[in-house]
Each structure stands twice: as structure tokens, then as C-alpha cells.
Amino acid sequence: MNRQEIDALVKQMNVDTATGEVHPRVQQVVVRLLGDFFQAIQDLDLTQTEVWKGLEYIVDSSKSNELGLLAAGLGLEHFLDLHADEVDAKAGITGGTPRTIEGPLYVAGAPESVGFARMDDGSESDYVDTLFIEGVVTDTDGQIIPNAKVEVWHANSLGNYSFFDSSQSEFNLRRSILTDTNGQYVAQTTMPVGYGCPPEGTTQALLNKLGRHGQRPSHVHYFISAPGYRKLTTQFNIEGDKYLWDDFAFATREGLIASVTDITDPAELAKRGQDKPVKHITFDFKLVKDLATAPTSEVDRRRVSA
Ligand code: MBD
Ligand code: FE
Image (cartoon, rainbow, N blue to C red):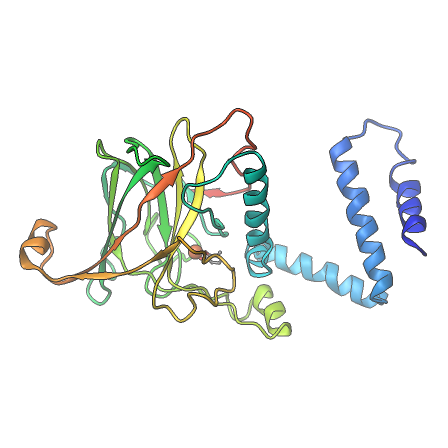
């Protein structure tokens, strides 16, 4: 069939058959995606078996709750960022800290504090470096934004995230910090290690068929929000990690690389209540003012809360 015939068939089966109320947006999307899919089946000469294996793969990925991971690993989530950047630019929205993917491991409801939070529960302190992360939230002119909400989450030294890793305490390495009167947030935590896809999972199984690894560099996730500003979803990825520019989820971007320094000065350590050297990262955020005419900066997706 040519594309016209395919589109006519799709319309005949899913548009002309309507007898009830139509959701026009859903209809538009279904018609387009089915047409593209039928065309691909034809172009690739997909067998019936191949099509069913594909649907079964989606079932299996859903059952193991890996669809979010798959979206990250296939670059869908990164593509959505690149597309959102283009849409924003067309609406006159530029500048500010770059966005990058949320990933599948956010948990709502983390403990809130003002200015400072200790994020780790101490269970790794004996053998993992303590890390201080600090920065200021400003607008694109450099004006500080007090009371901005800094939601931050990251992995432990095994690359695992609390909640999804039931061996960790509740909300370990997850906090919500409001910037202080100087627009500053400080987090005391432990050095994260990069995530790897479950080796026996559905995502890694597909990545294997593509000859790809499923590793991320060490990184820290953020949502930054403040009234009147566009919500920012981003991360920093840590310089020196072998996967920094080889991230299976493509989250590393210019402007989102953090370098780690050592704090060894005894007076500085004492000020922070530390008795051994610690690591330090500075990471500031620039928020863009919201515009009534702009596309929304909120992404509504299913998220767990604890
Ligand atoms: C992660 O920690 C992550 O950030 C992404 C994008 C995918 C899997 C695990
Ligand atoms: Fe992550």
C-alpha cells in the first residue's frame, strides 16, 4: 500500500467508525502513530511474530516497571528536552541553567528544610567521602531568589536510589531545601556513584541487542522552583567520571558539569563540623522568569510519593 492507502485504511477503521464523543487530540495522535506504524511494518517487512514480540516486550517492560528507564535509555527523554528547548526558544524563552532529564527515580515528599539539609542517614559515612554541595539560585540577571525550592536526589555509593532500593532508609539522599535569605542552599551528603541498569532487566536486554551499555556517570538530580519563575528540571554530572560523555541516558550537557574540590583546611572543616577532609561541589542555578505566553514548564507524569 502507499501512504495514502494506509492513511485511508486507518481513517476508515478508527475515525469513520466513531459513534460517540471524540477526543480530537487523542484521535489525531492515534491516527498519526498508527499510520507511521503500519508504514514501518510494511517498509521493514515485519513478520507477525516480530510485531507480537514487540508488544510482549512492552508488556514485560511495564510489568517490571522499566518503561521510564527505557524512555531514558533510548534517548526519548533527552529528545523531549531538545524539543522543549526549541519550543521555548520560539516562544522567546532563552537563558538560565539548561534543563536535562528527570529520569525515572524521583520520589515526592522528601523532608523539607531551610538553607541546609543533611541528606544521608550516616550508614555509608565510615567508608564513603562526605560531600558538601552548595550554590545560589538567581534569576538570569543574577538577582538572588530567596525561598526557592531546591529538590535534590541522588544515588548512594552503589549507584542505588532509596525507595527503589528497599535496603536504604526512607528518603535517604532525597531532600527539599528552601534557599535562605541569600538565595543559598547547602547539602551535606555522601559522594554518589553512577547508576547502572539492572543487568537482568528488560531495558538492559534491549540495550544488549543494540550493543550498548546501560551506565550513567555520577550525578545529582534537581527540581528548582520559585513563584514567578519557570520550573527547572536538571542535574549535574560529575567531572572525571568515565561515563561523563558516555551516559546511556544522554543527560550530560554543557553547563551541567560539576567539578569536585577537596576541603582539607582544619578551620574550614571545623566550621562544617567535620573531623576529616571532605569533598565540595559548587552548583548555582539561574531561573528564567515565567511568561504568560510561554509553554508550561511543568511536566505531569506519574511519580511515586512516600
Ligand atoms: C538514573 O539515576 C537516572 O538518572 C536515569 C536518567 C535513568 C536511570 C537511573
Ligand atoms: Fe539518576
